[in-house]
Image (cartoon, rainbow, N blue to C red; front, side, top):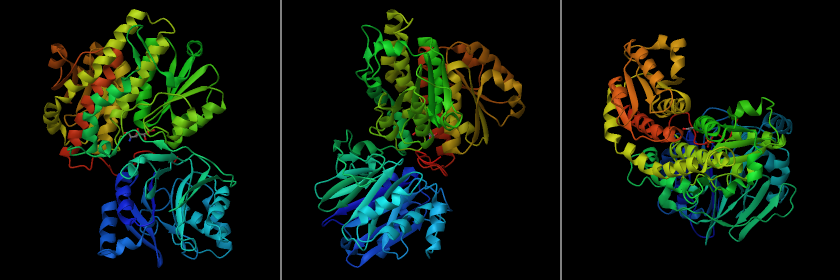
Length: 614
Ligand code: AGP
């Protein structure tokens, strides 16, 4: 997915704000970047492959001294390639046939080939392989004097998803923005208007924002903002206040955002929990679910959908709903689910997990579930995100912005939110008040237990030093710890570029054990949960093949510690909460291995923070 920024002001240069905005959005994609600047002599375009810093350098050279002051309106883009290689030609902005209009886009225009063919028939010449350039030509072709209506005309012909911003030499002072399926937010400042893919690029200027909805098209001038629908009917959108500030998206002295976000987890989970536990009746208060006890008690099955780390959290959810609420639950990979003609209906509660709230596959699975009449809720971290709005009910994670591409605090916050939903559902069924009170009390302890794991970061770094050169790793766990094994493996893959596999501990001997050698460390999740003794047996099978074993072991479990080569101790907690405490050790292990291998960490190669394309 890509990052878009737009800036419009009467007298402030757009260059600095556009570049600052791109830096904030770089986690969304970073294989090339560009800007289009509107000044008295028309529109100037600057594009560069690589990270935003390279575009910075290009602009410093191209606009020396106070040259940049000439441009008070502009658009900018940082790209995650979907059509065409990361080259300057394919970098955004793209221009219309006569070069007078510049446009940046996030999303996929699915009918771009047909549109391109039609335009070529009328003499259009294209400079890139991108779907975006087709849209720039299309708007230009419809522009008979009104850029706003020309944009609506063009977008009505587009199939697919877009977040776009465009400016034109023929319409000085105007910026048109629109969204369908890709997020776009307008920041309403005192003297400037800032448009961006998400609020992290806006809060430095204003916390007054308008979240555009699918089908909205807005015209921005230094005199104001006008919003219309695609068929040009006037639309009004409320201005909302962003509830966090720029400080929350700075590194705060940490070397990487990922380390900051790992260490933020005690506070993040405090915020997830805050005001949501009723320790007197041993239940959870989740008004955002917007479901009566009768509706909750009528739920016959739960389907938890997500991708990547969110899918792993959903897999933990299965154990929570079945063990705490006696409700059958199935985790589903969102893309697989949406194309499987899923069997869901009014007796099912579909819970969509998404940190960004914009993942295309998860959004499509939500829409499919709504189409089939299921009850749909979401667990998102980004307030006002598309998935959160389209489900209309759910539990916001309140974990604070997660900037690092590798998800950490969102995972633990999702598992915590799922646990509280399971507690609430359980108390509409057979979970006793006493058991509910015990679980609620243990949930309150979790932030402190996480701190105890964080305090071992140095020990974990020393263990990481022993294994940082491994090219293959296994993560094994049983029951509720199996999804956590998958998550530990994903972290190592994502940021350390080490091939790692998460496996059910019992499954190893059915084939994968053939891969074990002295050079293949195995991380065994040995927290004190049902099945731990069996996993210890699997550990012996691994060591019999000379594979070194790193154990994540409950404090005081000397037998488990003696059975492994290296031990990371974690505090004791209830089995339902063991994934949260265990995963923090795995996050730190992956972080230290990646750092020792000299990897990028916050913006790993080939990745993007939220995948808003299929
Ligand atoms: C996790 O570390 C990855 N960045 C990725 O798997 C992510 O979890 C997945 O793309 C889903 O994103 P979402 O939670 O924003 O929907």
